[in-house]
Length: 468
Image 1 (cartoon, helix red, strand yellow):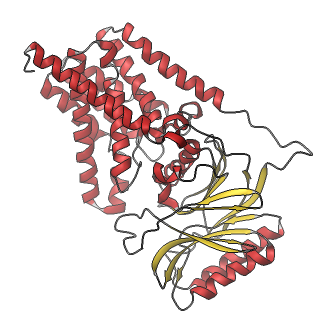
Image 2 (cartoon, rainbow, N blue to C red):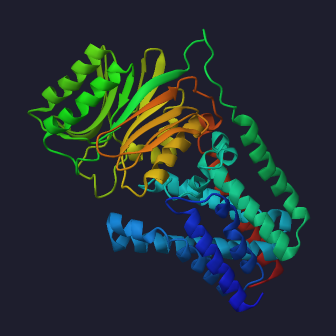
């Protein structure tokens, strides 16, 4: 392949990756995106492989640069772009070296192992959790995302990247034998996804109820976090009362709907608690709660017999640095249903989502940034697939969504001024998953596999006396 052909291939991969990593990805492109880059990398020089990977890495930022700029300015854009350049350049170089020195059946696993392993490392160390994982590009492809029930988001990334790696080596090196195992793995993962996802069925008369009637309410008419909680309560409480009149047993409001100052917080809490007692409904609402023990991004769960609270544990850097961090999950049973409560960004973190394994329904007050409503809601949906529970998410400036334990989005509507969205929640969820038991063992094992393959490559090079 000529130099300009390799550069063009890297540019194509960058463009496809930009769409795969975008706020509204088209899932098939993620399977194809790495292929031109990997083909260009095989047979390239060392400097060329690094350059082609860097081109694809920086290109992958094309559709997200404006979003990151709006959120945090130029610094996050530069930092993320540099990280992408380094990661993709390093992966391209590793693939190039493995393709030259290792048997094709081993070299084919270098790219997927690196992709899944690096994502596992990032999810465990980044203040943004698993945000940026290629796995989220597959949220509209149900058979693929079922792999998360086995190994979390890295399992999805591994399968997608393995397909690309096998195709690239098949084209670049005619490695037909090396494609057999990847074909078996990818085909098996998709077959598992098809057979794992049950066909939806309607409740049958005289059977125990399987659907819970709920209302998700979001008030985008309020800017920021209003200091006058009474104004906010006056907008929300009539809608809560109306939901109770219509037989809805659960009402979920968004994150930080108002600031509760120390002198007034008791009155504000009691007003919603009184409605929950009087109407015998479950109300979950998020607030900026300035209590005696500190200031918290807090979610309240009001029920007939009292209320409990949950404090957000993962804050948006910069935006929420004034809040104290929460320290524990909130899990409770109400009317025979086991609930968990988390807040918005918390569900970007697979480890936190795994703490709720065993609940039927996750209730998540949230507040998005408008354009990222689809992507951010799907991060929460994937936590449900990983751990086997339904997810109910009520977001300001985003989407109101309900998904089941298999990642099927059952209800979805955009938030707006005084939006009240009636939904039904599946309560026959609680699907046991392997991931909820073994955690990120698969992701860490792929990182170990990548290290083993890279070490093998270095050993072969030194044994052969090559200096590359």
